[in-house]
Image (cartoon, rainbow, N blue to C red; front, side, top):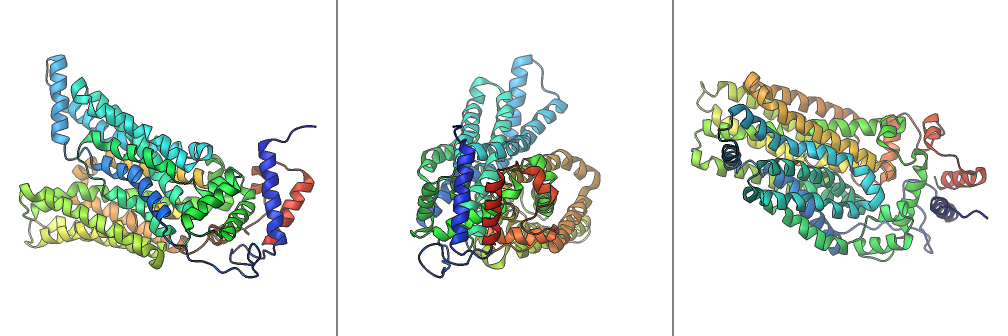
Length: 531
């Protein structure tokens, strides 16, 4: 007799569970139906922030997201000293000073290789989270932080600026992985009523990642490496991709703070059954898969809008704006830090209001505010030399823009990406979203200096137009997802794609490997009855 493969055994387990769901009287995909057990009626419990959920959020975000924000800004403050080190090292090696062109090229590489590394890190997300899980990927990712930290910390002793440049690329890979995996990990572990707030936490830690010394970037990674193994893997990954129900139940019990997690287990099985038609989507299949077309377009547009809306340009211009407003040179850096503090406070506020106000509203408010601030800032910069109070209006526009970006465009796209896609397609979706994010970041870093020199203050009109276009896209396309299960969100998006939740269209058939007729028939019956 031929032995069964692990995949067929797992399919059999899922099939058996689907039949159990059918027999228990499940009547809808919307998840609050007949209780999964002895009781006749399910009483939906409101998820709470347990100590386990809080601690794993802090460990994951401090160990990963903090480094993203830290390394974005890590080369700004020590830039003059680093460039001086580059010149001194070059002079000592070759006996001649470094040319201005070479100095500009080397410094541009130092800055831009970080987002380029982030782009390549995003491409690794799908294979890694599927193979070794969300927690396993975060643990492995610490290598891409600790190794470059050691290298950068010894760059002066080794008299090599090349080490810094290469290390920036490696730490970019770390940021590319963490910026996608942390929201996925936290989103899958959070109850639906807390998913928004916890999903914003990575962005909060990004905003407070201020630099001290380049070598210190490894400390959060070491902390995560020590503490994260004591916390559970994503229950959805454990159940649906590893087939370990008991382990998934124990993880949920720790995260929720109560023992009865059967309804949530059932909801996961229902999600798995309803998405069987999708298969395990690769990025290539995802890009051509009609039932997920508008979800894919939505996350691409939101991530492009996030990076092309001018947030980096505003920060680049901030020091100049403050000086022109009369702020003394020796205090400009403190005003810039205060602007960063506003960013932190507003991102913190977003964590508390995202689950009550909703994702869509915050995105619309954020992009609308940024658009208005860009237009007014352009006017203020053009006339600040002739109108005495215009420089102060410029400062106000910078602060208003930062507030608008912090409550919506910065944190919410990560939350939406988690919610719009289900287990089978989520890794590929994060690869697309992350690659878009980092590629746009890289492009802005390359072309902004040319835009600034060629267009001056009018470059903010372009950013304002991008914010406006993103605003209208969200208004007409992106639905509200707060308080909804992944299945409910999937149903909403299925209507936008012109499809039913379960369909026998050719797209599904092409992506599905054939199963035994009897098993497929039983599986279909179980799924459709559960619906």
